[in-house]
Length: 97
Image 1 (cartoon, rainbow, N blue to C red):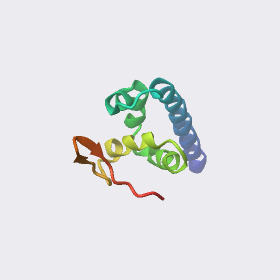
Image 2 (image 1 turned 135 degrees about the vertical axis):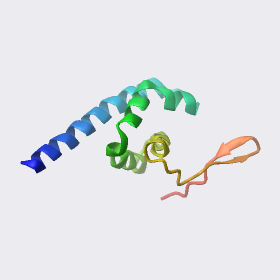
Image 3 (image 1 turned 180 degrees about the vertical axis):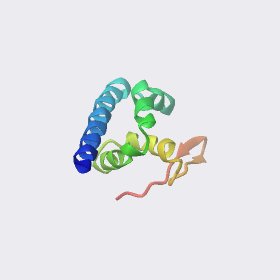
């Protein structure tokens, strides 16, 4: 019975995440400013969901939508690819996979 409850919880988390992701994409698709992208209410709700959404975000980042990666440092407290500033621009050195 516990497994059933756990599975249902995971399904609910993913469904909520997908609704929020859809709202976030629609609201930020024409923006490149990280403050706007990360400040969108749907993204704030995604970040507030915490560690439960990290695996979902990792799958998304591997498949297509790389901007979602911006949520990971906020959720996990880790920044595995810290930016550097070159010529006045912030750049990340993230190897291709």
